[in-house]
Length: 308
Image (tube, rainbow, N blue to C red):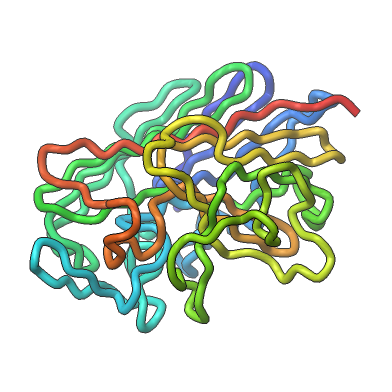
């Protein structure tokens, strides 16, 4: 049977296709400066192929995005052993993360769809049960919002994100894209792509994207780093991506304190989230969700065009 899909659209020609499997943003079509809608997500497997081989492309990531060292953390005096799917560490929620689940569609209109997932106690080693909804909504003239809401039955670290691979020209390399990331600090990484110490200033380094610059400059091997914002900084632009060829611009907003910036030759990821390995780092912003609290992560991708 074909994989079920949910399509939402605006009169402008902007549209999104969401798969209940993995609460996946499978397609995002956005008008260019000539008004022609084109795909801005690249490398997406066909829907039916996702069950055969795991792909994070466009998927919802949880319970905890990015990595947790040694697939273990201690919370309130209890140590929890997690799914070490990137031995010896946990990556993107474990071997059976939320990107591998069939979510339930609970509401749909022409411009929005909401999905629901129940994660039982002990899922991938995490404490307590978690109930989560994911709302994908289009807003005129050109915004896609993703809103994740969760509650837990026991205290648990929670960091939910969307893992899209973007190329605003729809293909080719990303060398011509320009990127701005407003973060004053970044996390250096070790050989396991885990945080290696405290946040460091971006000033005077290759990590300084505070003014727009090419995504990749000659001699730079690429990025897979978390850019850090102050915990109290819960609004405003996190990043601005621009492609001079198509004229498309994407402004990324989030209420979480980090953005993981990851590059490939043909695409890049900007994943708003809590800082990686936060459950083991009391010096990092706290990512613990407790019973009675509401987890809300709102991500906005605001698209527009610039003239030639």
